[in-house]
Length: 40
Image (cartoon, rainbow, N blue to C red; front, top):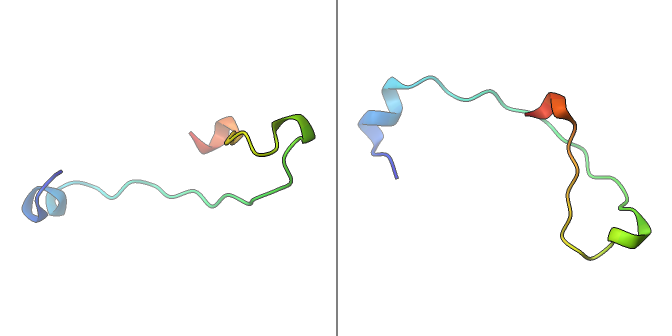
């Protein structure tokens, strides 16, 4: 992990807000998450 002095000189990463929606029935309970390419 980076120390406090190193992280204070770097730019903060951009943040993305995601909304949780219902999973596909066949993927329910499998630990799969889908995010749009724009979130990368």
